[in-house]
Image (cartoon, rainbow, N blue to C red; front, side):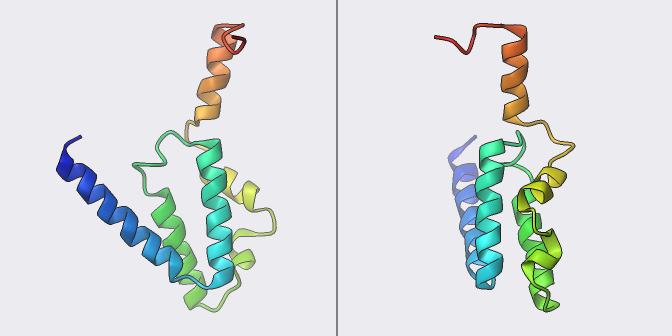
Length: 108
């Protein structure tokens, strides 16, 4: 990864954050909770993929249509996130596999 890639990545992230800040408050709160959850669960391709920008697109469309954020995602936001990443490999799965293949690796 070169310096230009880093600079471009920062520009894209700043533009993404600006889009999130422009969301209505309830959408912004749910987005931030989703982002926190996804960072914790850790889909491997989260950083390079289009998941987070796709969520913002979805939320912008919902807000423009006058829908409440929970009308879009439902009351269980974590379950909605799980559905989004159901086909993605997660860091939690990799960790579980490493424990399974190397019992005692988590004990130091």
